[in-house]
Image (cartoon, rainbow, N blue to C red; front, side, top):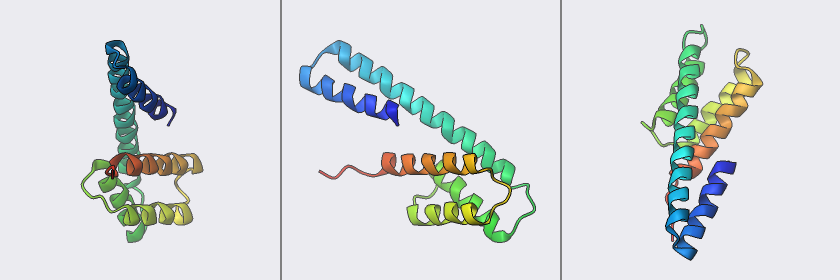
Length: 119
């Protein structure tokens, strides 16, 4: 989250003062944030794939599939994704609380990142 805030500040500086150095720094910051986000998504996908091997209910598997689809970008149904997260929080004994928090933060970040800017 801090990296994204830094990116926004650098982009605003770039627009306001037009400095090439600030634009270069903003581009580097954007690339860093994008790489970090892609890395976090890849890590989450790997973890979700490992959960598929658990002998759990169909609802559990469906929730994992829904999260995986959202992270991959194959569906954009935020409501279904939040319901899947909620299901996993309530019913999973296998997922550590820390992992659930990380998944939730990642989904929230992707939701804000993917929402179109209305202006």
